[in-house]
Length: 234
Image: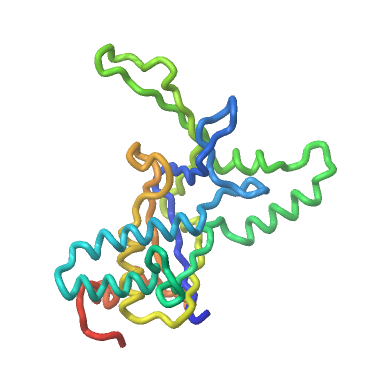
């Protein structure tokens, strides 16, 4: 593969990387997590959200400019029912916590597996998350609807002035053009909400994109201003 970028995600509010089910008798909505209890966001989900944001930006363009950037989008993300010639050139990995952190904790869990007070996946999950509860209000009575209480596990937001905790690797089957980088940059900046409960105040995030030299591409004004123009790739 020719290029590799890193997409970093900072949680500005409590967030649920939902997995579509809950835990009977405990919570209605669980976060996606691995065998050690570390939460993560599936790469397929992240790619779909990024594609949606790019689509929302391209639809605002006009005529030939829109067609040009739609072609760029289709090259990056592919098209439904793709054959070999129209498959996506981009592969998105899961958004995970720092590898060094998960590796150290995993080794510790392995060493303690036969001890009585061993560190468990539940301990890990509980240290990074909390449970939020909400109920529906009856507009006529002003009281909560019977049986409407719902609970969801959420990832605790990142502290102010700290680095983003979650990182996803983006791999490409060929070298990226300037158009492709530009589209990715504006799409990443537009991606401001992730996970479940996005219309209830959860999942507010700040995303940034870095190249192999650790340059923050989302601060590259040349790439930002390039979107929506047709000047030829350089």
